[in-house]
Image (cartoon, rainbow, N blue to C red; front, side, top):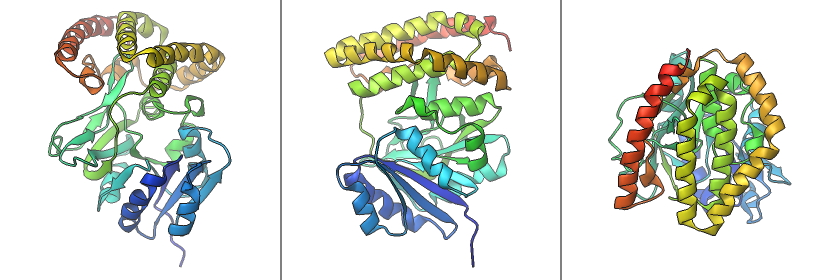
Length: 350
């Protein structure tokens, strides 16, 4: 008897041999015959693909000969699926029993929900939250929501500004309608960008507490990560909002830019160079930015005030820096951003 597929769990690997065994051994027992696992390997050099083929023959393995980036590989996996739902899962995660049913339930129950994300707990300290969706600052900077809070916090389903790319679910129909991940972003922030585009289409993002996934999340922001985060944040922000909104948010964007540069300067030459390369990359992407902005603005159904409703003034500096100076800086920055946010929202038309 042939079963219609409920979900395709898409995992992208790149030199993840040390993670993938734990991920798949915890994932597979949680699935039914109506679910499949698709692993897209981006030309790993550590034997990841060979190990999966030998140890997990039930997994659908796609071997790429190049590394097109995370988003592009996710799009490949989605293109192979015929399932009703797509679930994207990082290889450094370990889903817990019952996670998938809980995660997909809101997509079945609420037609205006576009994306759902679980409660991700730190794998080595499961008593603490890694992220419960993403917070998005009014400058576009995205951070882990609930980071470091007790695992018992956030006991109810909550609307969030963006989902976490470490694990989230979406209908295949919506993913294809949105055009999937933007492959130009290559790595980082693609989850936030997809969330923003879904919200522009009038669909919300939910974080689901009963869906529990452990995540081996390393703290800090490397130089390479800073480059992609900053380039992709600006690319996403500049095409998401109307020009009047961007003008009203200019003090916010400038203030956040100063803070990021301060972080780069404190982190050393590699981070300074990465921040500079982010702007160089963005300049080279200007033609793509112009064309995609035109399309997104033409297709949007939600105004900027509604988009910014979930974007706050607090910038949790403690996620990248510690100490009294970081805490004091966070308080002062939040107060300043809050004032500018009020003025900006008053100037922004619906």
